[in-house]
Amino acid sequence: MTAALPRLHAVTDDRVAALPDLVRKATAMASVAGADLAVHLRTRILGGRAFLERARAIGAALHPYGAWLVINDRADVARAVGAQAVVTGRGGLLPPDVKHVAPQAMVGRSVHDAAECRAEAGADFLIAGPVYPTASHPDTPPAGLDIVRTAAATGRPVIAIGGLTADRASEVLAAGAHGVAAIRALWDAVDPAAAAAAFLDRLPALDLMDIEINGEPRHARRGITIAELLGDLSLDPRTVVVEHNRHIVRRDALGTVRVADGDRFELVHFVGGG
Amino acid sequence: MTTTLAPAFTDTPLEIGGRVFRSRLLVGTGKYKDNATMVRALEASGAEVVTVAVRRVNLNRTKEEGILHHLDPSRFFLLANTAGCFNAEDAMRYARLAREAGFNEFVKLEVIGDQQTLLPDTAGLLEATRELVRDGFKVMAYTNEDLITALRLQDAGAVAVMPLASPIGSGMGLVNPYHIRVIKSRLSVPVIVDAGVGTASDACLTMEQGVDGILMNTALAEAKDPVAMAHAMRLATEAGRAAFLAGRMPRREIAVPSSPTTGMLA
Image 1: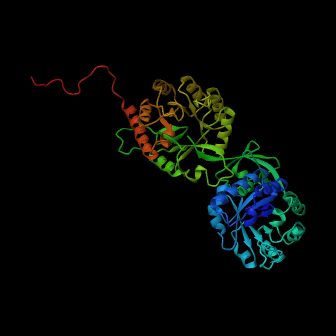
Image 2: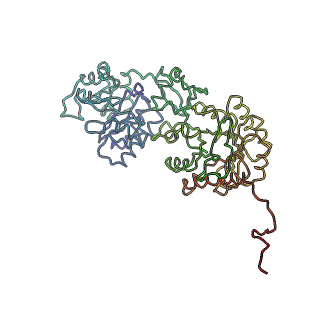
């Protein structure tokens, strides 16, 4: 799933997470960015239930566009709403703990220096920053492009954060970032959809195919095999049977048959029955 | 046949499509309130054959819903069903998907004809049986208690014919013992009564008709205590089978004294 990690990450903080028109803005961005958008819900002021309700509302708005919902810290909330990823940072849950609670989710980890990059072995992707001076952390000196390079050297996809604007996107990509994250540049824009579009213009499009799985529209990385698709969906090929465009795929062929644009899959397994 | 006491009778094992089973009780795995209860009930039932259904994986799952995470396929013989299929084509599609799961070539074939009664569409059932048998499947066909359909299913190559005691999940018990006896007397393949039993006496009465086995799900899953009911059904299935083999006394409409009529005091 790592290559399908969205490129544009609209991150919230306490103030943004409480915006009354948060869902409207998220929907506007998703309508232009689709599966290339991830909205991160990050707040320390909402209690469990309010957090869950907010997450559910955003998730429902993003789902039709294939955009991701990412939950910060609260693996329990991520599990309850079926979020695509959980991001934790210093002092937060470790990746194995998150995967135990929310097995469906990818785990992202915030990293701020080389030591943190080395320590994050269990994460699926890294959020590295602050790259540039940022109003979110006025007292923290920016880590510069070095933090992007250091994080990218771990081999995991890196999302650059901290003072990012559309104009700076190509710079962080050149340093090895997979994508960019922003708070103000997106949420405080008069037209969030236009702001998202401006970012996307500077980001190479994800090479995704449109497919259908179990009747739902989905994206798949171009060129992958069915075995890789199952891996992206965190499914165990030993317990799933695959029907590919109405043809059953033998288990020993899953690693050789490739997914193509417009393919239709039925993925079935055994459940209780009489 | 597994008994809790030393068996006082000898029985041949149940053989279906070349596979031999000790238990004549077959059970489903649906509708249990949780998987732990289901597993304990299966163990208490002594069943070797357990049925499972084929359904879409939930892509937005938050927990593992597949039954193989709870059921050890090396301990039980997994019999996939085609429940929920309303035509031969769908049933064949489900059967082929189930076979690809890689456990065996058996299928409990259901082609349902009516949403309310879940009674079988016998034309579709025969069509799917012929096609699947041609494709190498061992078909155990869920049908109604109609002799002609049962004979046609046997002719079509079914390895077992499974007439209902009463509609699926109804718990009405054996409503037509006569037709079940007729079917059993005319078929050479095993006759497994499938669906409709509600409690232990239903299972016992069914087995007393001489059928080869019985398959149930709801009677266990919806019992207040599924594990205790599974135990009761195991005993009832064994009791009914033993009574059938023992051969019941003739029915009479007059009393016959059990104690000697001679030696009475004057």
